[in-house]
Length: 120
Image (tube, rainbow, N blue to C red; front, side, top):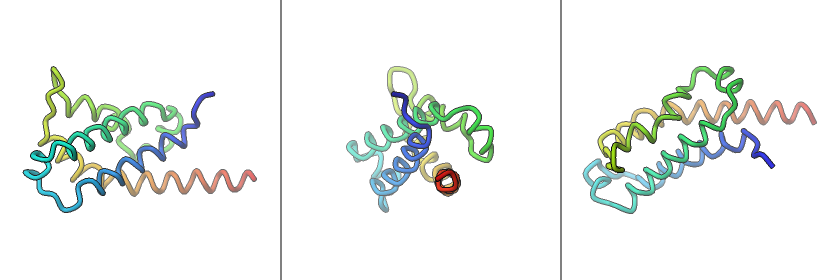
């Protein structure tokens, strides 16, 4: 059975929230030095990228305000050849891009929920 696309959007939201939780008030230097946290954050970014790829094209077109292609390529941007992670890029992504994405994802989820409730 194919997974409903709304669940992939929910995955994106949860990953962003978990990244916020993992980081707390860490600095970039603390983040780079904490292998557990940095690995967990990179994994969540990978999940965001994969989840984005599973959102149907018509939904991505409907909500054009989100940088869907950038989100789908997040993993490729932060992990270079031979799995070398660029933590500066990761940090910039989580501090600049994710705060822009999260409220938009929240709005999409609310709209989808309202549509579902209207159909009932």
